[in-house]
Image (cartoon, one colour):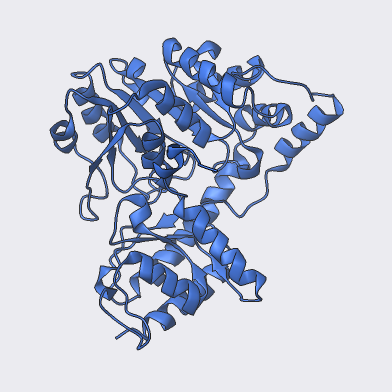
Length: 396
């Protein structure tokens, strides 16, 4: 059997791979603390579950429109106006089986072979691999801890060529936690209005998990609004990872293109999830706010613990629920049995020695960093960092 060459173009997500390795150790009886996966450790709020139960009892159990039920797309429009002061119509909204599918829809609708997609590092692991699946070329812009892991207009403009098709970023950012301010986004908008052929993919999935103030969307700038595809979903802000609901807001031409693609892949997403999503989007946000308040407490504790680790250099995340320290001071060190040569070695060392799972920074385009989640209980966070500190102390 000869498999498609498509499979050689991209890699398995390191986030899922590390979670798998952690589960395998756990199955052997090892007490592994998971700081690798990006999943809120909260249950879905009750009013959302109630809406799903009602949908089941009301027999919402049939195929759904590819773009999503009208009431759901109207709910997305209501949310975008309420939270972001963005005006969209239901025809401009496409709902899908998670924000990951929304990203795939967007890139497959835009990118042809050898088209260039500019992505600032660090970036979520799937960005680059989706570009490769679409036969595009990834153009990385390296950002730094000192610059708050944000790309400047000058850096972006220097990377633009006649082949540039897409600029792709997230705010709040996974894995760095960087959040672009309104002024920073306006500067980017002023750049991109000079390049109307470039589409901006703005991943805003961590919108509600913001530690520094109000979320800002680059789509708010009217001169470039039609160049923007807003990507969002319910997984992070509503603790609905398993429900699988993402959505895009864009100009109608792009929306119709993404709908056409999705019609051949998955058609419409789950009918029950869609009805629950309406309750999430237009309902009570207090549970989401409470989750962010708890993440804020965990962030404070995590930063104190990370900054107590000798040699770690850590940016204080402004959003999302990760820390992404530079760990390169440990390269070349050994515990007498293994030598740490890179972030992957350090991540595996911590898994096998400290029994704490993390994700190596190479997967995010930053080879000197490791991502640790604080979407876990305070007890587990404190226990995990005590283990990490003890394991690292054996490296000389």
